[in-house]
Image (cartoon, rainbow, N blue to C red; front, side, top):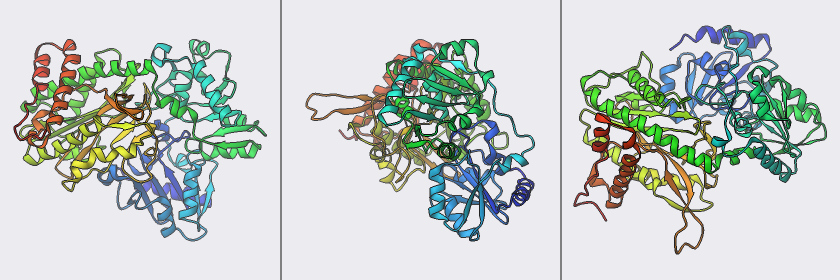
Length: 602
């Protein structure tokens, strides 16, 4: 836990010099990203919090940090409660906290390059007595003396064989959507939308292969790409072609200033306040709507679906080799969380196709696994020894797909309670994996399938059941989501063929253990004789053994045992050709059919 007192004092002094009574510090960047480059990690610099979602508010005499249920334990381990009041959302929002603690008329600064219109609207409703003040320069940056510069890593070309569609075709489709919305142009601000639209990738954000860039797309299929010129090789410039103009990253706002009278589609959820303000100041006619690229990107084409399947077979072999290694070496006490996750990354890299991990691995043993978004560090690193559960949540970025898998495995002898909880989680996982649902079904309607067996025992988990996943892009991709929270983004989004989501119910007993079973699934059409309406289902993409030592067979129905055995048969068939020796022998044992107990229900 860092000493934040000096940093808070410096920030407060700077705020006072600006005539501000407080300042809002979100965890995002100029593109409203969830995962950000090191230069934008202002919340971490100020508070020590390393999670991927949160915000802080600093007043002259107090400060608070706001996180959701995924980070309840982590935030208390990383943030000094003597400096920051720790608040859980949605129970306490920044607006509610400001209404309670800021004086009437208090001038509260915000960075218009990091703030959205919906956030400001919520602030106006929840704390109407304060005065939000946009700042010309972020006050945190003035205090952060060793702040990294934005990445200047080169952009790279994603070949059409992986993308499944040329960038020119994508721009034409986007142009049709722009015209259909009654606009002439569209601002594309989300980094993954820009990467998808131009078939480019990069390394400007750790674990997410995007390029720091904006785009201004026209209804005629032409576009301007705003990024650092140094990022673009001659090959990439040729790939972009004559219909894509190039401009510096900082050139976006001046370009928007020349759009007076033009009809411009802009997404208030992905475009910061500075963009909307620039358009309004220029006299542009704003058409506020969701970025059309988001849904196009979410529905994978045939090449992307094939790539995802291939990536998961490759990734599954690496995971199987890793799980075999854990079984061999954990009893000798030679593995700990950090060395284990490093070995898994080594196995993935042996394919020579891994471009990066898709997120920082969660390698957690015993009580550390009770933190859903735990990140192992030397101070918290645990040896995989004794009796307990080891949870490994990890993924890879390959040019043909993005993977994300969680396996929970027994180290030593699991307790009856662990087996009960694991089996309830697995039952929920199977219920979601085997769901069949009509077109138009929303993710929020399916969430209960994964929770029902935990709920029956008075148990639950404080995170969503499924998030969207990109194609060699962000491991967290919208708009689709499977979650229970009312009003959670994405839960009202109809699931469509081609969408990839995670299926990851879990259970966490604080201070003791954590359980999660996660596979990625692809939404597919599922027509059957007798259907009265179009139906959809999930195709499971992830291929790796599930630890049957943690299964209590008497809690499973015959149909659930059949699903598990059929899944393991698929895993064995796909992975066996890539394994040999002890690893192959382990795979065969780990995927052996589970017998039906006599008590299993039909």
